[in-house]
Image 1: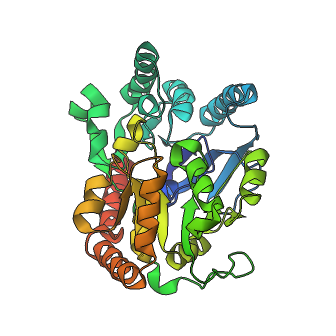
Image 2: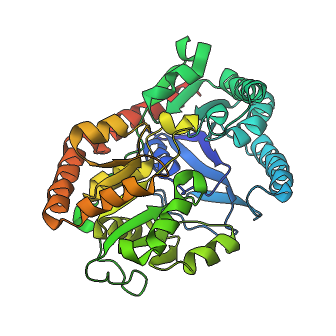
Image 3: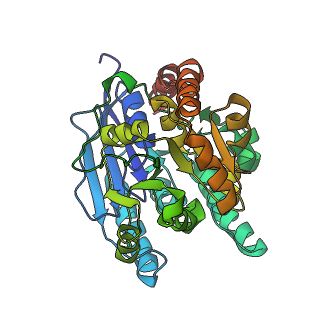
Length: 385
């Protein structure tokens, strides 16, 4: 740890649970050798205290605890409250570097760093102007707000080069841009068996799928529930992830052939992914961000050796098709899903595809190589503060 300067600090900020994806966890690991004080400020949308899953034992996590129904007026109020809370945390936190992962955190961050002089790194997870079906003028306003955060940022971290055009003039400036895909380390040899008290044994003759992460109709949740509820389709669906709508949870639990297991640890989630026949990634391609972003669960699926079922027109479309890593279905097309499921009933077909997915990860997607370069990114950043 000889590279650490005892006076240097970095804080990672996200308007969601800090470990909802591995992005902050791997950034903490990459920066740990060069910053002595590493903290996290986040919005715990589950309302629960969070477990430190990072490799840094002294990591400090400060959370804004407020839970509200999705798309409610209370969410708007809590967003403003979160931003005020974050502004004051950043103003008096004496950080050298602030790395933000979203626009909601970026706005108070640019205000605070103007006073403190801290460097701002924009880790763009979900480009604000691409995440919603904004009308033309509203979309321009949304992009302008994001543009302001980009203008204040000294460096950028992107999950894909497809985001380069979103940076506009800032992508053509001298500011460093580091691209690290949403992939993961290789945990294949250490995965536990699924906990059968949580994940039931599948019924004979049934295809088993997994739906992971944020529950939303734009990610295919409704038509998957409709499909699985039809007993003639003989398909089971395991749903794992956060859901702040009790009404939706009750609906999932009341749907035949569907099992809701809540939020799982990473190891348990990967064990589930390895256990099923396919991972559903049915993002709606009519939403712009889904045409440029590669979801984390694709990389995790490849690591555990399980094929994906994805929507036609997503960013992954050509990669999955060209390398035979899964099946492509038109978003919302029940008949197309039915044809894909029939292919997954062939155990030899599934076995061959699982081997291809695993081999593809080992040869192309392992995170270890990217982490070496990511550490260099933070070394240079620490040298600048």
